Length: 165
Figure: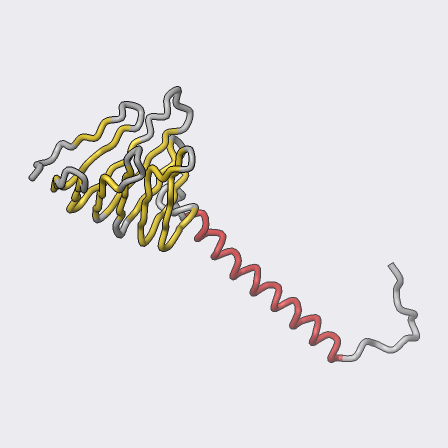
């Protein structure tokens, strides 16, 4: 490090003020960041989505044919220790197509959830729809109303434990 000569002039007062201002700004920034770090430690990752999609639209195809279509005003994806969860908090509509490509089934609900367990030998993937659930078979012209339905993908089974109209 080079020291100024003994007979050199002292630095102007304005230089000391600038250094003091820089030190004060750095101290304030560190103090402000300290609060944010404590706030980040309080965030519960199980309650905070890792992804949010507005106006979600998804299409599932097989051999060039549409098998399923899904729409939701909002999807929230959560990455939990044991499972990945997609939550549809403000409604979901699922359209199912038959092997001829005709729209066969329409399911609407106020909310929905898709759960894919981690570290499972089978997928155990489950879907649930709840809140004013309406299942319409458009080809047979049949309608079912209930509060909750479940779909177990491994068992290829749709079921409910609620009253059905």
